[in-house]
Amino acid sequence: MRLGMIGLGRMGANMVRRLLRAEQLCVVYDVNPSAGQALVEHGAVAATSLEDLVKKLEAPRAVWIMVPAALVDQTLEQLTPLLSRDDVVIDGGNSHYHDDLRRKSQLSAQGLHYVDVGTSGGVWGLERGYCQMIGGEAEIVKRLDPIFAALAPGSSDKNATAAQRGYVHCGPSGAGHFVKMIHNGIEYGLMAAYAEGLNILRHANAGNHERESDAETTPLRNPEHFAYDLNLAEITEAWRHGSVIGSWLLDLIASALKESPDLQEFAGRVSDSGEGRWTIMAGIDVGVPTPVLSSALASRFSSRGADEFASKVLSALRKGFGGHLEKKS
Image (tube, rainbow, N blue to C red; front, top):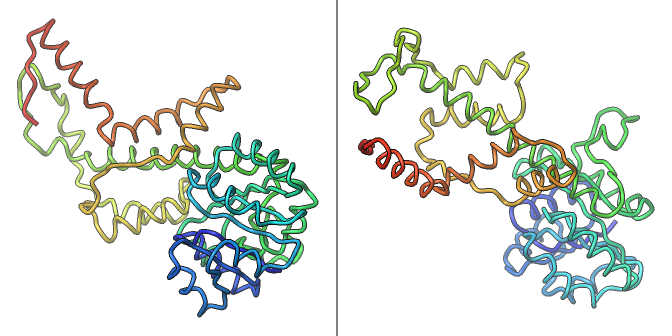
């Protein structure tokens, strides 16, 4: 099967490489021409424009868009007039599922098909494969199965289901990105749980250090209870083997701590790309509580200094009602 790929960033380019390894033909395009040329040596066909990409694909075409969510509509505006009836457009980025419903309606009116794919695997997907959560018409999803199968992690079991191989047709348009949105919300919570637990372990030696004795400092009642200098790299490595909290995320943590026990190269400013917010909003809409995920998202806001003014308000209040002065940090 021949696939067009638009957007050759970290994930898009590696997805093309994985498809080529599986002997799927790929015509590629990126606004940066060198990104496409870099894939030619792997067997891809580079297009010089969207028009050129469409011409190099046989009808009915399948074009996968792998660009930031904010650029999908702009890309579609340029691409869809070039396509023919029964062609398929696949959005494999992190679009909001509400946008999928709108785009499905717009493309259907033009005789085109729209498939949304939540793609998980990150920079490791080239070797590990990509988990895919798919939304769209069942017949069209079936047509694209060779692409999804090539990208997925796969299985040594010849009788394995698609889900057991790492991809699933979740439902009609929007379902793929809806499931991926919740997937990323869960990811926020898991990451926060590891981070908070390791932070406690890192401070388990608090009793070994002098603490100021004044009205502004909570005393540590039993310093001897916190006299542990712990090797977090060794602990996380041990957790990887037989522990109930073992996971690929833990593998990444253990690797990072082995290379840099203090993680000094990181400032601790944690971004959020939208899916965590959308997950919590969906929970509010359907009346489902999400305390863990909400807290995980709020901690990311705090990491970027978004709570600085609120902290200043607290300091002003403490000074106002109790004459408390801020301590030097």
